[in-house]
Image (cartoon, rainbow, N blue to C red):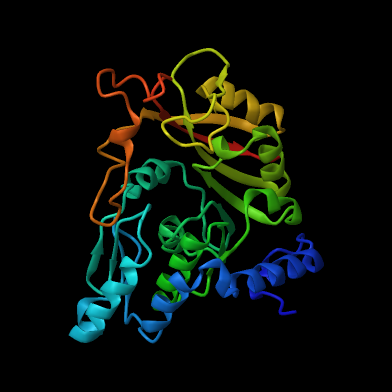
Length: 321
């Protein structure tokens, strides 16, 4: 079994169990019967392309420029990128092809920036890393490593495609989820966990796993869906919340703060909260399915389609002492 190069940055990780797990994941991803050729074939068609320059410092993640490729290659690239639709996070510019994703992810990143710890030389985890938009933004801050945890093949394959062009050796994604953090004891200086917690049936166990994976003195930046209110309560939807079936507990900000503190985090601080809107999450030509406007009661925008309080987003910073 091959030992991934990033393991040398995580001396507290359970190397033997991770190697076994990752080998099984690689074999699973290699199976044609799972329909993964849908992503592997388009990626292979443009795998030879390399960006002469990248810029991760602005709102748009820029990988290469239009002059790097021929018109024929550009048409092939456009087809390949469209095979990875829907694009959930962005925006990207890939060799001049502009990808307007469902989420205007630069807005979330700009809310995080004032609270960002020094990432220079840091070992970072991005839980639920999706196509890597935030990982590329982190790369501008010169970390030693950013390891993405992304269990969904579509997003995992999209990152591999993009980073094949960008060639960022400090950025890696594995087919891992938050439930695998127990294999990373005291491994990370900083963990980003954004848009994940409300998808976990046991949010306290997930928070404890996050705590375990941080080094002493490590920082957690957590962003979550929430409901408005000043009480320490959480909504448990009957079937779906805003049409999403995989939503379990949606807390108020105070409830999430209590969860963090009771899980063992210190210096827990809410630094941003805002209502969700169709300005930030919406349909585009790169994500042509239902989006936020379809999840909300058209006659009462303060309620979801199911009649629950409409979602907010909350941002916390917490420390492991």
